[in-house]
Image (tube, rainbow, N blue to C red; front, side, top):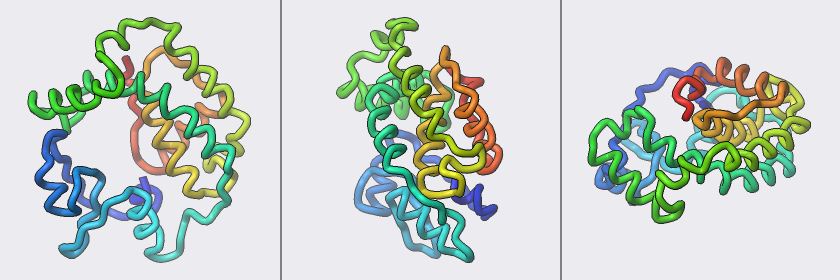
Length: 197
């Protein structure tokens, strides 16, 4: 996202989800994303964001909103319970091998329970997510930046809404819809609406 916002070209290499060895060789643990720059490796998403944004004139200089951080915290549990089973079904490149997809299902079901059970819950299971989206709408100050000027809140919020977009059957309040569509264009990351389940 930060590369897109800053219009900085980069090469994207996608690891299979079950590839533990490569990230451990780079940063000592299984975690992505990893920035490789001149033979050096950096993990931790927000460290990467800060590093890239510091090149030239910083872009993410706007204020942050503690209420938005709290909204993201509240949405994590209900969102990822619904997102993870759908991700396991999606044609993501990190699941292009049977072993990569099976690893994801095996490790994530430990915390969520059986994906098939979650996917069979029906529309009522999405009501908490719909309520969260309604709570978010008044916090969106502009389609171009949630707090009126780009900040790290936009990095966190768009990532969350990107995950929401894999979940079919949700209706986005107008302010949230305008924000997610505008931010998708600004950073060059497509939403997952066409893959939504």
